[in-house]
Image 1 (cartoon, rainbow, N blue to C red):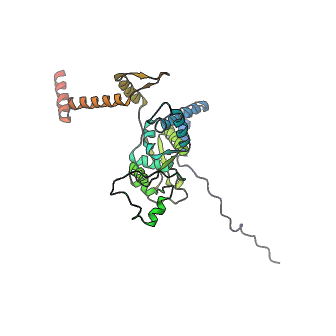
Image 2: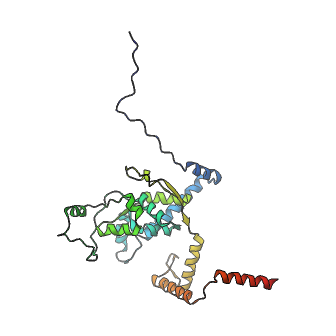
Image 3: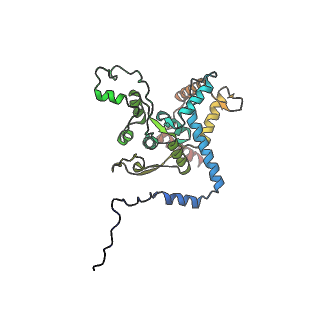
Length: 294
């Protein structure tokens, strides 16, 4: 009797997916080994960064005019509910720069794609536009009418990376819709940037199941940061030159009118001031100083 053949593996079952290997894991490990921080210190740093992120989000969503004392509590509750999971994409650059992060235009588009909210969002009213850009209901095609009833704008990767961010937001607004940012993703990505100073753009991990083309490969770029001391010094100079307002809890603030007046005065002084030396004038000046000193 011939020996029985061994049966092959079970049919119809796919092999296990390989776990994702972060190419930057070695770099992160090297940072941990070189700049070791105790666990409680890291937790404190995380909380400090998260507080800054929360403050930036609230500043450009909740603390926006009009702020009426009578309805402030109700408005705060309503806005807090709106931004619990999503934040308007149009305020993303403001939030990022409020944290002292100077992203380039390309980096800002990459960040917008990473944190873009891909779910459904209620439709807004179409704003009034120029006569040349409005499509009348009589001349609209059935496809346009069907697209107008959707509550979600489907943005492709090529459109997000190939156009300025403000144009992408404006195009969605003309369709009566609003692009949103996933707040959970936003906080996680910003926290990682503040820790490492790097923006990791990996389309393969953020394509929502789609395959990333060869033109959009994984890119890791350094994020330019602002020195917090410079920002504090600029605020101190503006606040000292204004009426030096303070809240009851001691928080300093500047009225918008005072800030506009100070900026206008600074620009006017710069226009009437002396221009900096040209390279030729600077060389002549240094040559004169050198000859005089000898």
